[in-house]
Image (cartoon, rainbow, N blue to C red; front, side, top):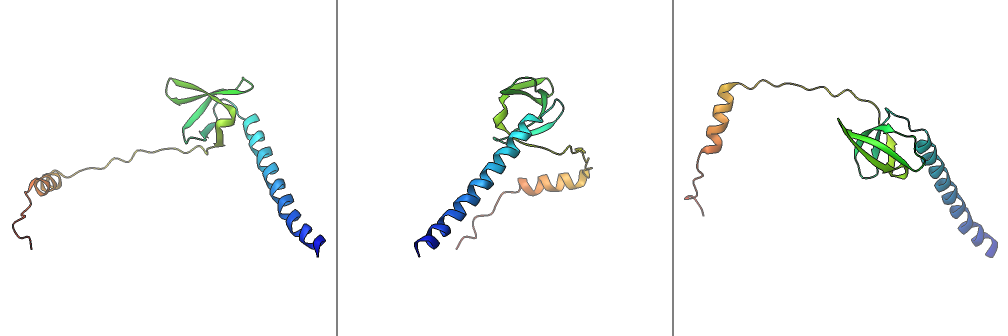
Length: 114
């Protein structure tokens, strides 16, 4: 009975440690494969483009045009797929805009309270 209990406790621990080791290896591979021009997301949710990856422990990320910040490599969570952001222009009808403004500007009638 005791050996069976020991096996039931050891197997989940072994599988958990193996899964954790695999995740660490994947993260290490990601951090070592970063190159200038890669789009990344940090652990805090900041998106940017790798500007310089020549340092061992840090990496420079351009978060906006001309704004470069230095981060620890460990702070890089994942590479982000390159997506083209397209701007969609909406045309607003002048009559709709006036109607909407008039609706917002009308005072509320509070005299009909129960």
